[in-house]
Length: 73
Image (tube, rainbow, N blue to C red):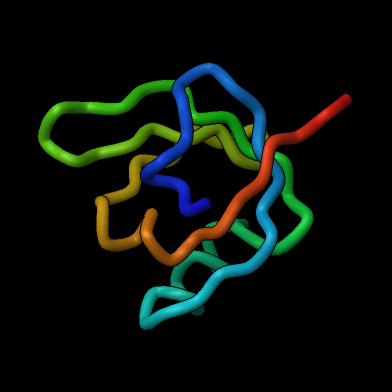
């Protein structure tokens, strides 16, 4: 599933990043294997993500490039 389908307050693991925003997302710390938490989903298409102890807001187009799976601890 992509990050837009993720539920808030759940932990996910990044499987892969595709698309035109791949390099920008990698610079922000979004890399395969990284653990992330969706903390908030705004009605205007913005997602607030905790990644590597940083809080980052992504647009829908950027979140579509990130493919994740549930993270089981």
